[in-house]
Length: 312
Image (cartoon, rainbow, N blue to C red; front, top):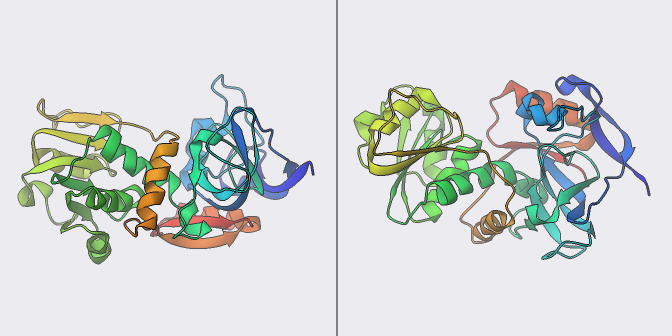
């Protein structure tokens, strides 16, 4: 077999560029795993990422295959890989500057894959890698979360935020979160003990002892969150690379980052999922051939959880 069915874009644009067609099987490098895809979660904003369309030297990547969150089975391993075997059920995050998982097969750096959590199905697992790994790295690698701390998640009902609430609870933190009024019960169900309506309740008027902030929304709520923090705290953002200078405090550490591929982080997420401490929300599942419809729905917004493509 030299070809597969895949979703590809031959011109730069949005969902209207996507076609369901035959494509060459991925080339498997020495450090890669070839994964037979069972499910792939979509991120509609990837159409805006420079690396979606061009290599680092500026040359075109067209045609491209989208979707960078994958759950599937290892079909082949490169000579320079370890920790996995052919037949393993895995999940992971593909590199943003390589073809994604909206296809029957995808080549992924083997160390970017981990064994799939047994408790979750393929669609639920595919919904984990990007948002949950971002939240994990924000709290553990950049925030240095510790049991007993007070953690504030800005945007607790969103993709990264909903995982941030669960992961902070699992780490033994007391969790507060902001969200819209209609999402209060959902965020409380995730484990937050204090839930504030970002539209009507100012963070700084309700909280004053926050040790760690996970910011997923940006400047609108971040200023009040900074004012609610203890001296020596950490403010970790995935929303803005340059924090509000007027709100900045010299006694609070501020970091911004972009998620990186990480087998150890994925393994920790899988362990938490199998303990029942971490769940994912799937807003909808579409067959691979309907990827254009799935991306169009994603761009309209209003979805709680990931939209997933069912491949096999």
